[in-house]
Length: 96
Image (cartoon, rainbow, N blue to C red; front, side, top):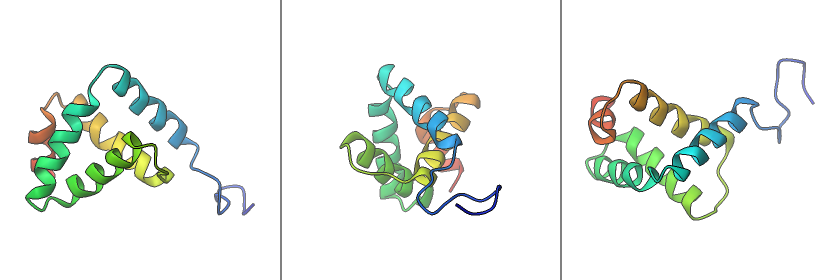
């Protein structure tokens, strides 16, 4: 383990657990299909944020490993859009 403020090489960021719970709650609400389609649609247009989030979400939905930084990024992107009360596709396009 590194110094007090550094993460060990295999230690996930502590906030990743809350992000993972947030994403699981969204899945329980049936919102992941909407997000998956929105990210995929914007990724086709070359939106980098959508490309990364789409792949991250696909990996989660297929029970593949995902690192803490990708979990945090996906959760933050979705949370930001929901707080701004935008439709997923509109938010992703505005972030390009």
